[in-house]
Image (tube, rainbow, N blue to C red; front, side):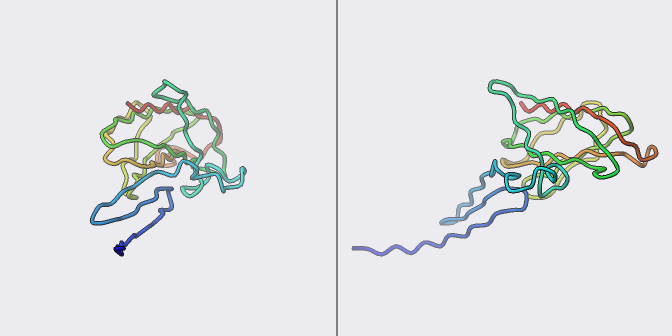
Length: 152
């Protein structure tokens, strides 16, 4: 009988990616249940408790209709994607908006305007898209917005 010693390092990020290292290789996998432990009233109100974006089978996009108020002024959504895919984000609302994206490694891109922003995704994992009132170009407002997300 031979005894094998393996060193396994396991981490889970705040945005729902489990990463483990085994024999000089690192593997990362998104946890699709990132917001399952959040109370319904808190979903979408923080980066730690985003609303998951799910595409219909065979689809490569989703349309989100949501609402901003004094609280929350920002909404958060999670999306699983692969390195090299292109994400296009368009949005419009009752007032000025801006959005951004947090990558699986917690770096990010943005702010984006609503007119069809496309980026190539640098990593495989769970991305967080955040959208909110752009108070730099207007007064705080309350109302509805629509966001289109396409991943190819």
